[in-house]
Amino acid sequence: MTKQASGRLRTREEREDLLRQLLTSRPEQLTGSRGRLSVSPVPEGNILLAAALHAAARLDKGLELTGLEQRLVGMLQVALEDDDEVAAFGREYGGLREQAAAFPQMVTSRSLEDGLTFADVVSEVNAARKSICAQPMIQIRDISTLDAGESVIGPDQQQAMPQYAGGVTVLTRPEPEEKRERGRPPMPVHLKLQSFQCLESSGDVFLGPEDEIYWAIASGADQEEQKHYKTGEFGSVVDGSVRWFSEGQSLYVGHVSEYLATHVECWEADDSDGGFYNDLIDAMYGLSDHMLETCKTLQDGPPNVDPNDNTEAWAALLHVAAILVAKLLELIRNDDDLVTEHTLGFTREDLIEWAQSDSGERVFTFDGGTTGKHNLHIRAGAATIAHGWPGLRGTAFTSGIDAACTVASNSSDVYFFRGDRYVRYNPGDEKIVHHRTIADGFPGLRGTTFTSSISAASTVPASNSNLYLFQGARCIRYDNAGERIVYNKTITDAFPGLRGTQFADGIDAACVVPGSSIHLYFFRGNRCIRYDNSGEKVIYNELITAKWPGLVHTIFSGGMDTACNVPSARGSTLWLFKGDRYQRYPL
Image 1 (cartoon, rainbow, N blue to C red):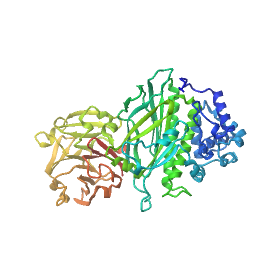
Image 2 (tube, one colour):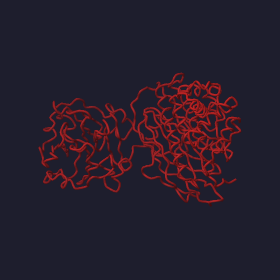
Image 3 (cartoon, rainbow, N blue to C red):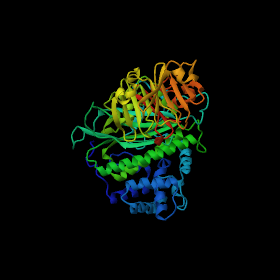
Image 4 (tube, rainbow, N blue to C red):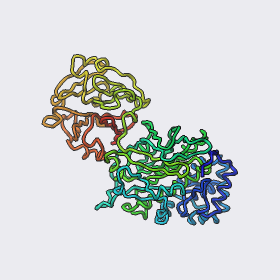
């Protein structure tokens, strides 16, 4: 059996037929063009789809929508032609909802006068979590059972992928002896798309043996950070092909306190057009928004959900979101060109273990049956400098930065120092303002050793022109406006409160404490000092991880190459750099 090369957008009449089938058929009868079940076999698994139609019916009656209903109507508007069609869907649902065996009675028996909230959905899904999670396309997997190189998506789930929409994998670890501490500080997470390998191409008889593959991504975390986009197309994909993603393409880059959810779709391009791509991206945005809300709700501890035993509830909530998006995309076009999709849920502990594994890489198998099979490789770790600072690509500053600091006289620019050169960089425009030797850019340093290998740099608190530059046991205070050295002293003469500490003969990184006009942070090895520049005294001298707990289990827990204030326009945050990696750390 080979897939057809239609891939066209559906007409309004076809969408109306699909809606009528949805409202008058049993779940097992609702299959797509490839015989794949397009809804959940369990009615509660289709609750968001039902809630979206309930919201459309309420909107048609001029009733005020809840926050959830507003989001769901927005997602319907992606799939449908205009507001009139949304209203028509609502009227059709209102007339046939009592026949809708695919929907939970909690929704179909509800008066249209009553809106649905996310709390209502969570309560209903939690009550049905056992039956939802018993489905073959949903997997809760103990990460301690994974062998090196083994696909995270197990063989039984891979077999179910071509038959069911809404597949979910939630990764867990053995229950800790102590219950999970709530309110842990957020930690940085970077999940980079590395590559994918084609295990089986589609064998499309119309377009030949070569596929054109692209991926669609949606992610959301409990820190209200999200990501959604589609990759470019990878052409000439045949059995055995390996394709690499570009540097900036990630599954997620941001912060996570406890929960991260992601959704990945693999598509064959065939005859897709720009209109569909825009609709797909909009659908991914709606899904990422829902995932963010789900993760945040779990972190806050919803009623009747045990915060220490919520894995099934989480998997079920991710499933209902995936079902909604699968059905919306089916309304937009035939599913001929969808290879397959899958939703992934990660806990904090799993993300830590992933990042600390030998390779930092995991494999996820996407098996669409006759539409193709691909292994997706994803790596966990801090973001690369080249990824986060694209204007530095092609320079030596994508790795091994010696020192960094904000430009004292400018609210947006940053200096990076490496060897005998430096760049002035504008993070807002992602552009290098200039790239020079230190001696040319700071002529007052000529004749000193500071024209090369500066170890740390910082603006002087409350100054709009002066910098501190460190090298070995010495410190220069430099007037950037007058291009002259104010003083060249030992660190202990410049900062007498550092005498007797390990910071007396060298500093790895320095920066102003955001919001302070007198305090500095100094870093050396795995320790951090907060220093009162006015009173010349140490406020504290602690392990980095004791004062910066979000860096536990990261490469920055043992030290960093340099640190830099994020310019005031971007908030009270620091950038930390080590090797070819960097992290944006909120205070």
